[in-house]
Length: 314
Image (cartoon, rainbow, N blue to C red; front, side, top):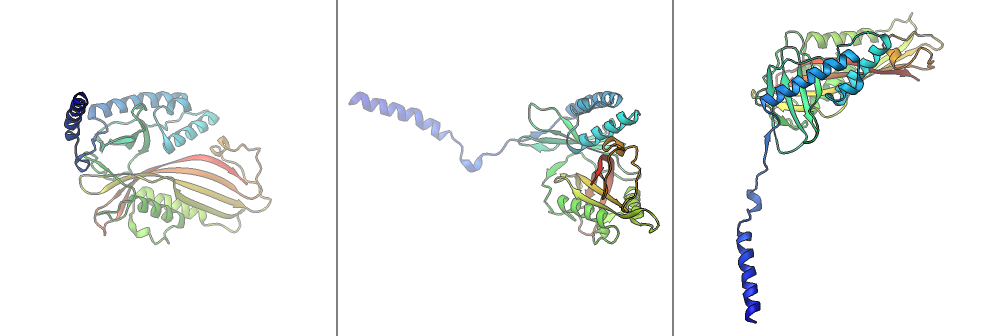
């Protein structure tokens, strides 16, 4: 019996110190770290520039897939497809000159960082520790547009409207509504006019102003948001948001009318295809906006890129 008791006491003495060393559950904090250092970001961008230039020269869909992802990759691969058909060079995967880097803190993957230069602002994503950094958004700022300072960025939820004129999700949806409806949209006053935005709105309005003598019965453009924006709060309090809009364009010629196919659209639908009811094209617009902290201030469209990615009919 004495031996048994000694064993029990010995076990108790071994267990109790271990138990006393455990932290209370409410005192444990998640560990975070910066997604990338300035030197690491520079190396990522340099590698991207090298691969992108090579992919552009060869119109290589496989090579560009190693450094791009998401809708940006879809845009670039569509441009390469058009370039191969028309046998002309394509400069779609524009290179970056890094001026400033914003690398938020993360507690896990996926991670992002933003690189801003004089000609382009982009978002890189890394899905896991074993995955490479890939460029997800690449937008050139409109002429005369001031880009927010990206140093010290913090990623925020796309649905968050705290201390903002509008949540990133809401702003993206309202821009899509504005482009679909036109100047009659109730959201027209929310956005500051820029030359690029005005030109896009004018082009859409002109294309929808049908001439009865022409062979077109109807023409529509419906804009939708592809996915929740990638959103980052800057040191000034405004939010920098990136997202993609899909523009579904439908043109209905009069019954029996013959409509020639364009050069670019021929990459997705050959001239031998005949459609009875309508011709369709799909364009992707990658957009960058700045959402102000003040409720009364206007949302700024910093810039966007447009690429035809599909064409056909029914």
